[in-house]
Length: 104
Image 1 (cartoon, rainbow, N blue to C red):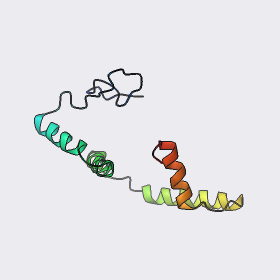
Image 2: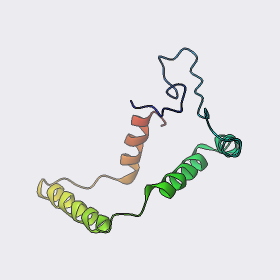
Image 3: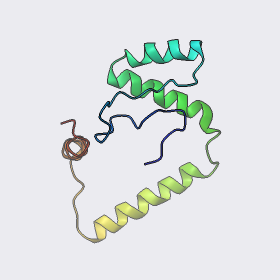
Image 4: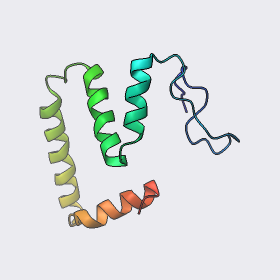
């Protein structure tokens, strides 16, 4: 696992006895205030904030991304249909994902 060099430890590392990650080493005071407020949000709100922050530094999307992704979806759908596999129900897929993430 790669670790941000500004972190003292890997977050939630089971091998870390202290298990209290310091996300803010070297962070400005205004950034620390924002982080403290963000960490007080619900998990869903933190995910929304993280998504927007990442998008703000990710750069413009690839020009052909949507076309390539739609072609990949069509390829996968055609391959599953050729194998005779029915499409799984979203509720089942979501439950498997959450189970794998340990969040049932």
